[in-house]
Amino acid sequence: MMDLLPTITVRRMGFEYPPDLDPVFIQGEPEESYLFAALSLLLPYLEPYLIRTMKDARNRITDPALLRDLDKFIAQEGQHYTQHARFNALFRDRVDGIADLERTMNAEYRRFSSSRSLRFNLAYSEAFEALATAVACAYADQDHSKWHPAAEDLFGWHLVEELEHRAVVFDVYQQLCGDYLYRVKVAQFAHRHLLGFARRAMMHLLDADPRCETTFGGAAGRRRRMRRLVGVMLREVLPRALKSYSPRYSPRDLPITPSVAALKSRADELAVKSS
Ligand SMILES: [Fe+2]
Ligand SMILES: [Fe+2]
Image (cartoon, rainbow, N blue to C red):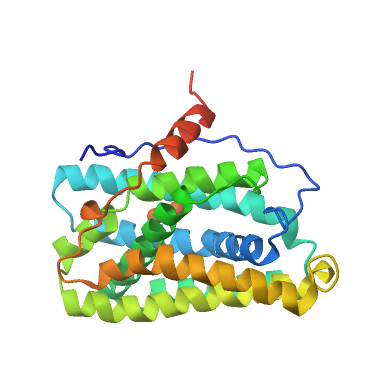
């Protein structure tokens, strides 16, 4: 099958958000909106950690092709967290307690960088990349007609680039460590840890939005929407993420869904052209 994403492209984006953008940016879907917002809140702390980890690994890599990809990985992740930090600022100031959550996330990833081994940090980073790949494939196949276009463009661009660089951390881990059992042991921890942060931030945002009790139908509305959201995650995200636990796993072998092509064209179209 033709590779839909054969190269890693570092795009500069000029996203603008309306200052009154509703944090429920998926119409009528507070849980899904706040789940994506929770992931977005994590990125300005998680992605700099990925960059620190890859910079630590860099001087041990000798393969010139992998070095080139590693540098593009760092450049892409640098763009991602910068753009998400701008997006997060839109609703951070409206919700009490978000700054405390962010401080906890920041301290945790700084602690990993200063006190955990490179092997651990690479395995954790790879677990995140495998999860991002699974989310990106699932996202590409979903209907986005209820999304606010500004949020859709941000997440669409980011997830396309996650797919473009999906093999880089894996390749670095394989070259420097290569221990399968250690990789899956850390992945179990990392996936629980990442989902724990996401769940905590999502519940915080939901509890802070009074419309959940009124406009969005209270507990019954939440149960109904959560059933659908959990169903999508169990059907679309989990089976893809679980592939990374196989000893034969390679991010290159994952079937990239054809709908990614549309997301890629949109990201290319929105990228700021350098003169
Ligand atoms: Fe990213
Ligand atoms: Fe990534």
